[in-house]
Amino acid sequence: MKLNNKIFIVNKYYFSYFMIKIFYMFFAFLVYGKITRLGDTSGYINHSIDFSMIIFYKSTYMMNFVGGICGKIFGYTVLSNLPFVILSFYGIYYSLKRLDLSNRDLFFVLLLLSFPSFGVWTSIVSKEAVGVFFMGIILGYIIDLYNGDKRKVKFIEYIAFYLMFVFKPQYAVAIFSIIITIKLFRNINLRANAKLIYLMFYILMVIIGFYMVRDIVNELSYIIPKNFSLDAGSTRENTIWVNDYDLYRNMLYGMFVAWWGPTISEVLSKPIQGIAFIESFIIFSFFIYFLLYILKNIIRTARLNIYLFSIGLFALFWLLFVHYPFGIFNPGSAIRYRENFYGFFVMFFYFIYLQIKYNIRSKSMEFKT
Image (cartoon, rainbow, N blue to C red; front, side, top):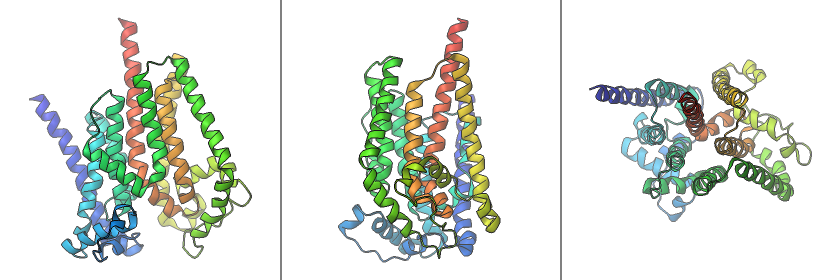
């Protein structure tokens, strides 16, 4: 009986979250869309249904085709967004059901995934909704892989990887770094020193790789800012990539700003951006707590879990780095594009947090025994 009650409560959490996304769907279409432009949503819904092979490998054409179908079925109404609400919700559900969370933990994670910016951009016909879907499905696969599930890759997971290459191929370096590391550490029983050598070798290879492509990256640093018009209300003047190799030189600061979104001065000049600023502050506080928890236990036990540290570092660095060029020049773009991997971030790092917590408890029980 208790088990049934627990299942009912968990389902009630998911149902409530789905209703929150439905609310954001209506809010985005009927309220927020009247204040500002909802990206390309209107264009997708009103687009003619033109079938050609290009829809299978160009994200914008795919969105035009699928959005046009939604518009044809539901008309230019709020319900045109419903398939994308379901899509993004399922991506989140696919990952969370593998975490085996307590009601308290589930509530907390879903709360972090209920902020207005994430809710709005992932509850409409948008590339962000698709991003949440495929990143959620891929994370579900990663969690199963970490837990030692030797099953075959499911069809829906193949679809997710395919969509990642169509919509966000730059995310592949983060995803495959995590997957390769998990497979390596799972299949080869490496000692702690060997894991540390692997991590240091990986970092060295990244540094060498960055050095080898430095001139190509430098050329891009002069091209990318031209894609952000200063006529747009929130676009920043390019003061960060002025000299050669500034993209590398200002990388850590730029990654932080591109992830955070609006600065204090931008909030003061445009108060509506205060919502995104507060969201970023709360999210940042969560990650600071997460890092402090890890640091406290490293100091207390004099041990570092290289395995979890490695996959966490790869996810953090690569996703923030590839987001950096797209978010540094416009806080609106920074927040919007962040939503593609925000759900992945929250669920993945909460998974790592729970693994560390479980390992500490296991060691404590062994000590007591």
